[in-house]
Image (cartoon, rainbow, N blue to C red; front, side, top):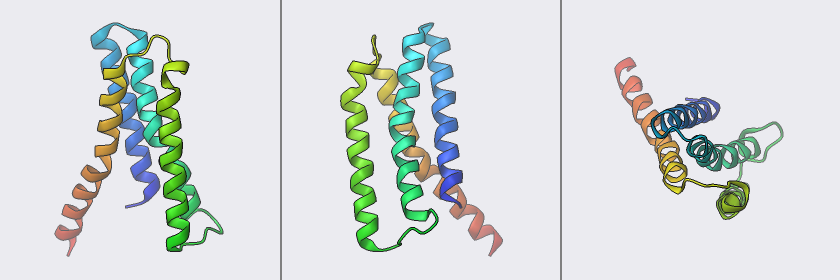
Amino acid sequence: MSVWRILAWQASVAVLVALVWGVLSQSPASAVSALYGGAVVVIPNALMARGIFGRGAGRSVGALLVWELLKLGLSGAMLALSPVLLRPIDWAAMLVTLVLCLKVIGVVLLLGQGRAKKSV
């Protein structure tokens, strides 16, 4: 399973949840907040994936630590800036989408593990 495929799944879930949330709430602010919640997960993860698996990337424990710290810092900054960037903000939509996007990694890895056992 490629890290880029997992990122694509996360982005897809973010868009799907934002569409559903926007339709059910009839509020564009809710849909935008949900998309932002997905971006808080996907953008830092993409940055870290590029840093760890990109061309010329050093795959060491130190590099992993640096990229993880950058990822966490960017996620925190994006969350801290959300009230400034999103007016009005729907906290529930943003946080539910954020959590669902985080859970995608576990679900995709679990499904991939099931496929690996079947092929063995």
